[in-house]
Amino acid sequence: MSEAARQGLVICVSGPSGVGKGTIIREVIAQRPQIAHSVSMTTRPPRRGERDGIDYHFSDRATFQHMLENAEILEYDLYCDHYYGTPRRPLEQTIATGRDMIMDITVPGSLAVMNAFPECITVFLLPPSLTVLEQRLIRRGTETEENLRRRLQKAREEIGMADHFQYVVVNDDLQETAQRILHIIDSEHCRYHRIAGIEQTILAR
Amino acid sequence: MSEAARQGLVICVSGPSGVGKGTIIREVIAQRPQIAHSVSMTTRPPRRGERDGIDYHFSDRATFQHMLENAEILEYDLYCDHYYGTPRRPLEQTIATGRDMIMDITVPGSLAVMNAFPECITVFLLPPSLTVLEQRLIRRGTETEENLRRRLQKAREEIGMADHFQYVVVNDDLQETAQRILHIIDSEHCRYHRIAGIEQTILAR
Image (cartoon, rainbow over all chains, first blue to last red; front, side):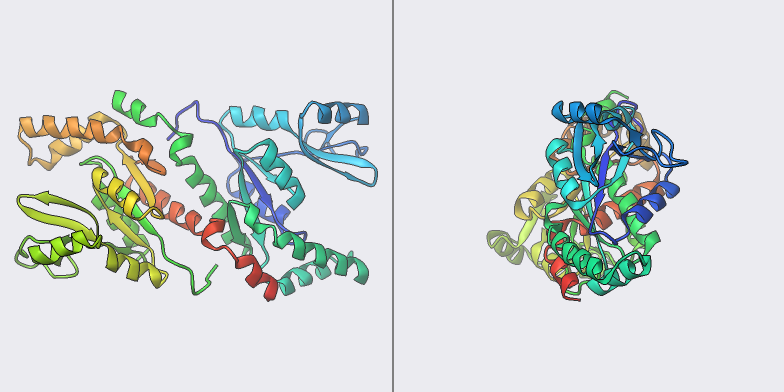
């Protein structure tokens, strides 16, 4: 299966806030460093220690808006008057070399990516229960009671969007969830339509 | 993901003669004994030591033909005047308990199963090359030169049918191929449509 021309996959990992997307993706990449992590683009100025192209692609507002108009941003959000988005080009360049790319993305962001890039693999992470999700949000300790209530309400709505995703994984164990995502990636590489014509290569050997 | 009502999967493993279907399936089951192996039905009389329901479901001709007419046989073949086929009921009973069932099946048999049981997962095993396949058939040592030539020609035609299958795995290493099939099974269990409604269960917890 090591045909050189094979294209990499884009894997969209989403789920409600607090479900552990970031942690899971770090674990997936720790277990398989060949997988690239999609870096967001932002118009917010870099904070101390943040590196361009690693933490974010930093951009000015005019460039970002120009890219938006040219469909070079797959999905974006405006937060505290700064744009945050997923640029299309680095993603296309990465998968063209055969490397898989994984992205940590909000539920609305995922829906936008599905439209702009329908060949992506979409995985929705579910918490084992709403109670567990609530405890995780409380443990972060950054929430006022009012904020927590709003976040939980949003999580409830987002969990109801699971049916827009191809795969659903209940995140009750970091290692297991990371393994499941790796297995999904491996299996998707075995789908006939992704390696169509491989049988002709075999017949010619 | 251990919802009790979840249905098992049917996994059809196919490929040209000599590719190693039987060996791979034994390895898959050795690694995960919870997976059941589909037992064929035949009208050939039992040989010494063969056990009914384990090596084959033994049946008389009238019963087999009656089952054929009632669509209780998913696929069948006639060989040396004896029927060989896959009965539907044991398969449906097994997956209803949530247990996965794997079957070793010819390429034409697979196409019949896809029609009769469209929810099955189909995996096509490819040899690393035609040369390797030829060597494997020669090593079996049971072939005349004429037979070998005919088998290879048939293998060529069967390999050309890979595009009818959902997944394709190149069988160049027993352990790796068995692992790939297990990963495909695990991933298919995470497909949203197989666990639709799980998000409501989570929301109620």
